[in-house]
Length: 308
Ligand SMILES: Nc1ncnc2c1ncn2[C@@H]1O[C@H](COP(=O)(O)OP(=O)(O)O)[C@@H](O)[C@H]1O
Ligand SMILES: [Mg+2]
Image (cartoon, rainbow, N blue to C red):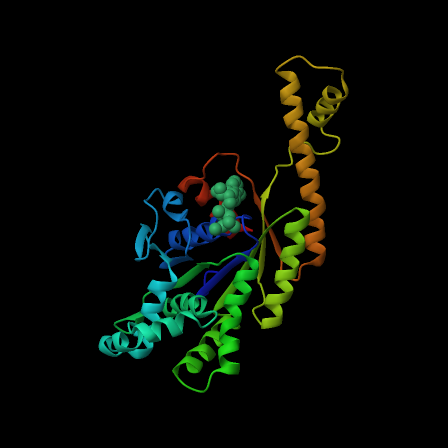
């Protein structure tokens, strides 16, 4: 997939399918190719630090590799920044945002936390230093499906319900950015399994209805095709699997090989279903059999995605 010319890359999907891993792989690959990249996550139990052999990423922007920075934004930090952005002057900001009454009032607005986080991601896409953009690309590791939909919907809600002012002006700009496929790419991550495929298709429909049409689908953690039908190795496995009780360790090895083949068969079935139902092209990403992924694995996955 080629997402190199985008200002913003949204990585979405069901919880646990590998959004953070795909976000890190895309970001690492773009940075290695010379783009200045910000990897943006929210309220996360950070994984990016370990993916680039660095300590966990916190609320301030920190460097993970050459050309690659990351930030783990929290609603409080994002809200403070966003408040500063619209109100410009710190004294005005403190009067409005640090005031006890206003603060309680702001807390009560549904979606304000999420809007501040989305607003901060947008702010980084616009951030300039000496008239030049600070970031070529912001890669946003979004919250899980339902939560990311409600977060992305907020600019629409603001434009429709809030009286004209700085808030609606920004919301309109954010909407325009999200819906512009030349500036924003949405990458939907899923697994080749029953529930994840259904949820991915639901997410594709809902995002498309907003005008945020996913451009790529990544089918992650695919089992290797080690036992294709008719191959000699498959015949050996079939013979072993149908033989009577096997001695150890042949029994365990056969059991695991059978499990792996069954997973691959299942993967292929749901991959075919995904390809049939999805509007966006589907990219395959292998499962890496390792307890904890490191920088070397993130590079392999990033290269794989860039080639696909
Ligand atoms: N292709 C892969 N191969 C091996 N492990 C993976 C792969 N993709 C993700 N993982 C692992 O699966 C777990 C969940 O992935 P993560 O990216 O944190 O998911 P999410 O951000 O969607 O919750 C993590 O431990 C991650 O390292
Ligand atoms: Mg994650």
